[in-house]
Image (cartoon, rainbow, N blue to C red; front, side, top):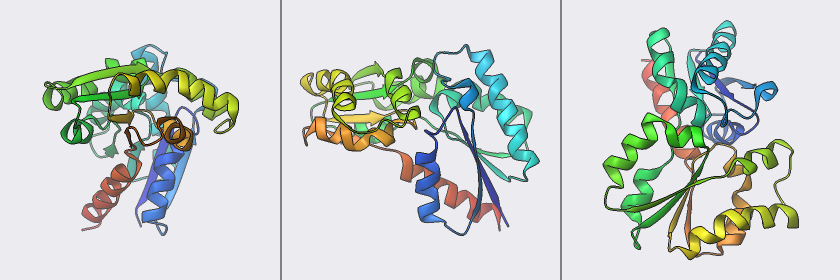
Length: 222
């Protein structure tokens, strides 16, 4: 039976794990939270590759057939290297859902909340050039969101104030889609929705990634 492994710098990637478990509750899963080295977003690329390689080795030791890099920053830094070094492993990476946001925008303005590591990555830059070349794209680093989630702070007045400082300017700028470009951020989705108050659509890629994993399992088992 196929076993799917997930890793992230912390608990953020459980947003992907939970979406996947809701689709495929019968599939065996393993999750690694590298909390000792969290966050990844402000680390050099080579360090992220090293940590990602270590996580992959642990998941392979546990018999995983598919490895989900449940971290946008780690995907941006390491996915190409990992695919080259582990050609027999099926990898699923993360990238901000710029394409659907750009295609569905009415104002021609979209926003992406992510880490600097994600914004520096090839996947984000290539997707943005391809699908958002005629779109105004507001890239906003929100590392403090990662810290909130890791501390278990996902609701309350203080959290709302921190979220509002990042999100309100995006809506005021006319963005009608706000992309959650870090797997930690769906844990704050309810607060973000409260702040946005229907003025923009929140783009959470969790279930799209979960569906992708499900499809890969079907191919894997053929």
